[in-house]
Amino acid sequence: MKLRKLRIRAGLTQKQLGEKLPIAHSRIAQFELGNEVPPEDVNGRLDELLDADGDLIDLWSHVKPTPHPQYARRFMDLEPKAVKMLKFLSQTVPGLLQTEAYARAQMRIGNPRDPAARIEERVRARLGRQSILHSSQPPLLWCILDEAVLRRPIGGPLVMAEQLAHLIAWAQTPHVVVQMLPFAAGGHPMLAGSLTVMSFRRGPDVVYVEGSRTGELVKETEEVAQYALTYDLLQASALSLDESLTAIHEFMEGYRACAPHALR
Image (cartoon, rainbow, N blue to C red; front, side):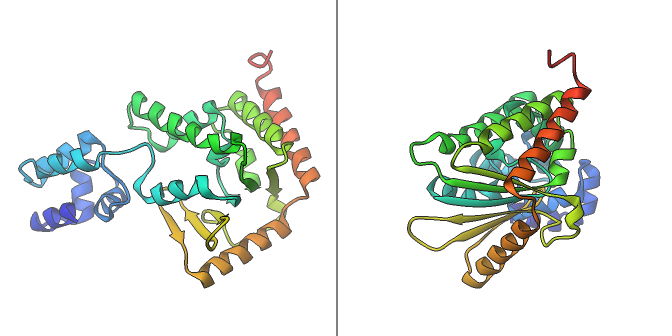
């Protein structure tokens, strides 16, 4: 809100302000909405461009970035309390099942201007979330992965081969299920994002819907029911458990064949 007021006072549109930095105007919008905290150097430049006299710098010290984006924090708080999580991922392996190398590669792609220390902080935070799967009473984690997740070589063949082997290992435990939604299934209701339906011992189910830099926690009963139906439809179109593991294994072997020397 403060940033928006300063921008309007300066007579600038989001696009004009983004051009002066330069960054995409869509990120200016995310800063103003509070969905993203600007990096320290960007915040300092905003303070200068908008003649904020240090106000934005002071504000940043109170809301400086944490390893998790602001829009995802409510979801992160609920995650350890869930007894069941039904996930659909359209583009990447779910964070709870990522290897360190895959997580690091994804973080670098998504945050190319962040310093290495910041990337490592994010990686540690993501890997730290995985402790819930190692607890004495882990949640049931059922994941449906679009075929694109397996075909996109994030981090390169070696990283992907390791990641898919990790998926296969987890899928053989009693509390993790992995299915693949093949391209041959055609269109589906979640082409534009990812979905998590969370159930708890007490209280109603909630849904978390996420895009590349946005996320929404849905609690309204009718909307949650609609998303639960969406998940049922995705599940009905996915390969069976055995077929999915066979497909993941074939992709893994394909990546290994692309990096034979590195895997010896």
